[in-house]
Picture: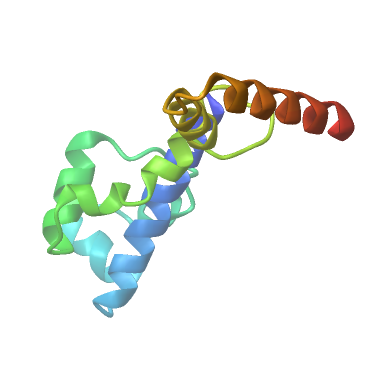
Length: 122
């Protein structure tokens, strides 16, 4: 399983637990309403077991929330701002804004500055 899949599974489990607690439900109560064991709910919440799409739909219904609730914040997981990782949100923003600079000498100066800073951090 990829690292991103693990992080998403963890997020979904955390959101299940958060919503269940917001409603004042125990794992046992949620499990009973779903027709599963409380251990299974516990495994979903800790991401020990993955939640299928169908089961997540049922959980959302029992917790009176849209399925999208369980994925709130996923953008940060999908594009973490970690140094040296290509395609992150920060890198994309840097490239987009750099491309908007029309003044060629300013662009050259910025590029030189970025190179110098990157060399210093190595």
